Length: 126
Image (cartoon, rainbow, N blue to C red; front, side):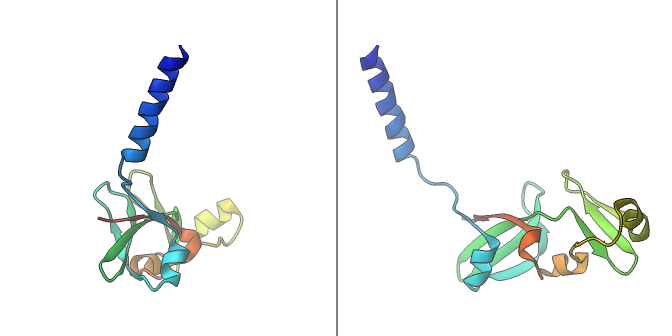
């Protein structure tokens, strides 16, 4: 029994150590501090909204963490998990939720003017 366990644990160790690392993760704060340029809001192949960050030939895709944003003077938008955007009335939402919220402006998100809180994980693109 111990020989069988030892054999299989050796196989698992070889498989894990021999497999290539597929993606490198980084934070938006780290990347922006290193001089990476932020592109406009876009969607990746899976339909996830986010931004491409680039510096030379290095590129990362950072996912959008924000779920709601102000849009114009009286509007708001909400982002669904399915990648859809829904327009909302700002006054109605603020009345329901109890006042002004600390949300980004949709115009800033579209242009790539980001707050670290609005950005999720960043993955290196190949």
